[in-house]
Length: 479
Ligand code: UDP
Image (cartoon, rainbow, N blue to C red; front, side, top):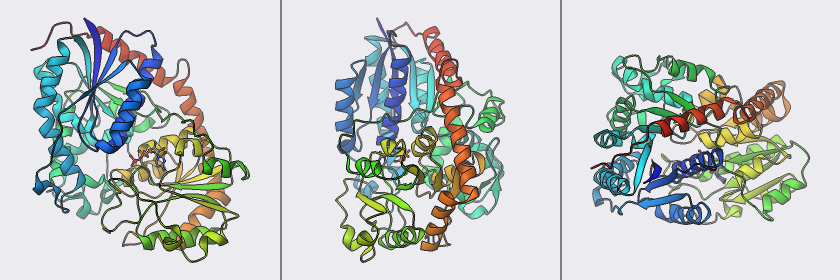
């Protein structure tokens, strides 16, 4: 019977991409490995995932996808008041029986060595234990994020108000003092369904056979130590931690991409790149203000702009994006006045390739964990401007913990004024403080290369993980 490891990623394109990158790492680490990788893909966000999945299927024959049945959310779930995470957890609950069935049918043809659940799918651990499968949790975010995830039940018992109302600094082992309002967005309101779901995920996590985290020891020493020493799970033994990162998306063949050609003509380390993840969007007013700040800073810039949001409470662009009309969105004459120094691109830029370009000297980011890691790997200092999910948490970690970023300050309404944009960009590119941050990120970059090199901490962790899988092969057919 063939041996296999089975992945169950969360139904979000970012999580799926991180999972595939982890799979590629496993396959390249042991090219002769007889393991087959099976990925159970949940039916959601199909427009963006299906093209990606079919590309992976044709280029990586060692990976097979098992699609779960489609899910049509009930009408009540699609109301605009319901948040994205709640919908996501409904889908995951709906998938529960299908996961069970799929694992049983896989076991007819494969011996399953390990099941790797995305952190958001942690609640499926109960199915895995019924089937007696060694189950690992993969976190496509930081070790600090894992520390806070594991410590959440302790915080829940200690405090009786929602994080958004607490107005205090939380002491999470290994993590810089965390303003309670900077906890991940779905955790801010204690009575929210998404809060309860995340809490349930945290409560079952200690049953995992191990945690696989996309980070490396030198980058997050204090949180990794706190987790490994059991400080974040004081009431039960902590499963082993495998820090196998940084896993970042590989630079695609970008051909004659407009922004890369433009970067070729700019001086070394002179350009500030502004890009806000796969989903980040701003209001029209915020786009306008950002443009004014950039222009006043006098710095060179490459800026990815999307159509503005309609709902002021969300910074998420879900679904396909139409091209923005830059002339109507940006200040009058802005594009013309800045044409010698700046380039605005619509919707998407090949971020990894841009960050690796010698002309890029700074990165204004929403602090998605992949973006932070990509900046670290290419040695680009950051300005942290979080928008959604766990990005405010990541800002604290990147600025206060790793010291690889400067803090972009919002006013009380969450709006970033032109003066702030101007000052931060200047500070990063021209000041002593900016130089220090640049120095720190270069040290982190060297640390990343060392972690991935021969004998490096991440290579050693990956070896251990693969040995653990080989040693725990489940040979019996499950039923
Ligand atoms: N990305 C990109 N071009 C863009 C926006 C995003 O290539 O214009 C990539 C980026 O390189 C990263 C991923 O999309 O690999 C975004 O992941 P991250 O975790 O930073 O943020 P998320 O999109 O999950 O919020």
